[in-house]
Length: 197
Image (cartoon, rainbow, N blue to C red; front, side):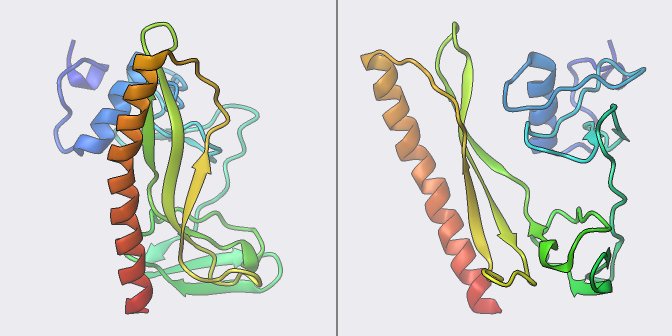
């Protein structure tokens, strides 16, 4: 089976991260949406399980399922994004290099949000329970927020219970220590970006 048909071979030009999400979707990883694409069963949605306006496969093709609402996306050009808002009309803002470039049209100005791609802490509980997403983190800024317009690292804790025996707890502790280095690196990056502003 070829890669274009959803086979196991790496797809030319696809990043290692996107390929890993693609593999997770094919293998039923609970952190990945995995919704089937009409007419292309070997190319499921590689988004995380959080809310998303449309499904997206490893090649960047998008589709929507009812009752999934597909919001029109704002264009990004020349380092700026142009967003139509309900309360302030057309708003043009600088697009940070770390932002994922996805901005829905038609909301309120205070809801405009820059967001980086998520990073996840996934812990493999074992064969019976499989992998569990413990938290996800991403850079985020709402420049027009009346309460918190500054750049922050948003951390989402998953509402997921797992059952662990003593060896499992030892493995979890080791995974938490390892992931702490990821969060410390994110804290340094966040501080550098805030200082640069």
